[in-house]
Image (cartoon, rainbow, N blue to C red):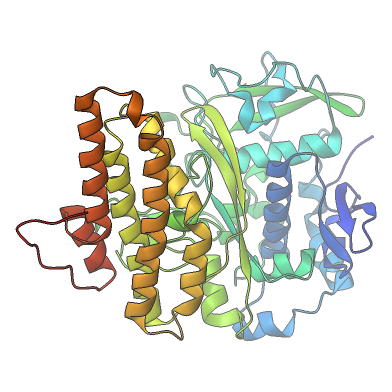
Length: 483
């Protein structure tokens, strides 16, 4: 049975009553819809991106006032605006196929696993059992196809990464209230596109010979519908059983995605998309994602800046931060976090940046102090990560104090929080078996403990840097200091 991704119901959702339903895209404007309900977290996030992209394609707000006026969901209007795009959104068939090579591809079909980022890609090492998806129902295949095209990692020779690089970070502003407020909060201002603007409605712009596709050559909504991979689904009746892939898809150059933060390695460089890291997404990752970075090298996602500058109206919101942490072609971990969207004015923003920087210096001091008991590498890095986790709650408490409390008081309380957790970690790891060690090792541990205590008090180079980041005067050095 054919599937049209505009007119047919195919997206599983949970509504406000907790019931599961299957909807067509225009029904995202039903105020009772809570969230997508795919069996994988990456498909759920990609589904939200697809819905944002569809609105950006067919009926975006023209400007801030238009966005404000149209916050109330209007399913009938959205259905009408999406309808002309239906011929471009057939998943299978003889004509143009959604996000697939126009005219089809010839070659050996790979397993349907190829559509999933964590399947390793062309020539990659599978991190999961191969063949876990011997066949996909059509809705799941459609969602997996979209996810791969918009998040494509390195995939072997000629198999390109997505428009925003391999394994990009997605950041969504979530004002709460269900699916439509989430989608509408993140739709960029713009003008409607035409079906022929979609890349699969024309011959693929291949990357052979170094050819690239630039922003002036496409509609801005292309950011939601890029096709770096040349793919063709192989189906038997109502299941996708394989995928044909050919190299040299479209190489996107100079595009920036509104749902992704960017950074520069140094001033004047071209911006690069931020990629998720494995582990907990805590406060040390917030700069340039949830709050403006003062170093000038990290840039908030456009959707966050638009919300803060034009759309929030003083309302609070949280963020959804998601994406695959990649090690070249191998998916390592899937990040899904909900940090607050931090709203601070100039001085508070600067001091928050300083709190993060101070923690980074003191975390390095803790890592160095553990040299007598832990080898360099993963073990000490794990302790540094634990330091950030243990100070997360205190950081959020001090952040809440910034708008109202004297700045030096907040800074000193933050120092005390870090000292308490840092010294406790050191004592747990270094002192618990000190009696069983030889005298030289005992002395090295005691010296390291003393040095770490001095760092938290601002007497060492790292400690002095932490104090300065907190805009506190480091203490004057004395000839002899006791820990």
